Amino acid sequence: MAETNNFLPLMLDLSGRKIVIFGGGSVGERKAKLFSGCADTLVASLEFSQDLQELGASGQVRLVRLDLLTASDSELRELISGAFLVIPATSNFELNQKITAIARESDILINQVDTLGSVVIPSVIKRGDLVIGISTLGHSPAVSKYTRRQIEGLVTPEYSDMIRLQDELRSYLKKHVAEQRERKAILWKVLESEAVWDGFSESYEKAAERAYAIISSYLEHSDR
Ligand SMILES: C[C@@]1(CC(=O)O)C2=NC(=C\c3[nH]c(c(CCC(=O)O)c3CC(=O)O)Cc3[nH]c(c(CC(=O)O)c3CCC(=O)O)/C=C3\N/C(=C\2)[C@@H](CCC(=O)O)[C@]3(C)CC(=O)O)/[C@H]1CCC(=O)O
Ligand SMILES: NC(=O)c1ccc[n+]([C@@H]2O[C@H](COP(=O)([O-])OP(=O)(O)OC[C@H]3O[C@@H](n4cnc5c(N)ncnc54)[C@H](O)[C@@H]3O)[C@@H](O)[C@H]2O)c1
Image (cartoon, rainbow, N blue to C red; front, side):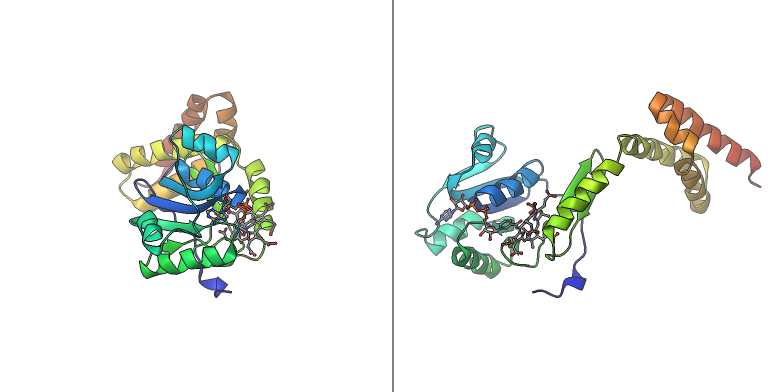
């Protein structure tokens, strides 16, 4: 088991990156669904789940059907050539280990699914521009999934509205308030305002109106 207190989450721009998944079963399918929306995802397998076949037919993932046990090393190297991440997820542990070894030769990141490797895939919540990754570093994926479900209930649609409003206010304040510490104080006043959060239930514009009222009041009373 890897030393688990050295793992940290990173948010990576995967656009244009190649991700190769070996094994088209329930695990390969779950990983392909996660990555197909943002990376060039290829799945190599003997068989493919129904959902993967549909993802392949719609062009969201590339499917390569082959018996990986009879594939030559050069064929495997060809499949992973240029990959950013390799995910050996067949039901054959030894085969997964062999693919891992070949990927390691090319210093490619590897997400091992049958043991704790150097890359762990978290449970992911994506709500517009809010992205949350949750992991127990291999100790209990079920708790990751459970925690994701708990947090999903907390992250209401207003969170996306507030991100949009904060983004708008940050641009406005950068033009009108020179001091970064003052801009930060104002943004937090808006963030902690129940009136602004309640405003979203009426309309985005109502929440924004209340936010700008907070800014005006702050600027009138600050000793600028
Ligand atoms: C988070 C998530 C991401 C994803 O893969 O998409 C993920 N597994 C998920 C679900 C899940 N996987 C398993 C269960 C059954 C209950 C349980 O075992 O707990 C459940 C829950 C369920 O299905 O209910 C079984 C399991 N998992 C691993 C093994 C191998 C082993 O450890 O032996 C075995 C077979 C164990 C056995 O043989 O008994 C290993 C890994 N699974 C990980 C990630 C990495 C650690 C992440 C972390 O620590 O948080 C790691 C190390 C490698 C990896 O990255 O794949 C995804 C939830 C997505 C979502 O949120 O819905
Ligand atoms: N990381 C996780 O969350 C997690 C969860 C459950 C299981 N696992 C592990 O992941 C592995 C895969 O689990 P699964 O539920 O997806 O299995 P599965 O049986 O549903 O799928 C296995 C896939 O591997 C393919 N395959 C097997 N031998 C092959 C070969 N010689 N050539 C090409 N393709 C081949 C099969 O065609 C199938 O598509 C298991 O070994 C298990 O240890 C990991």
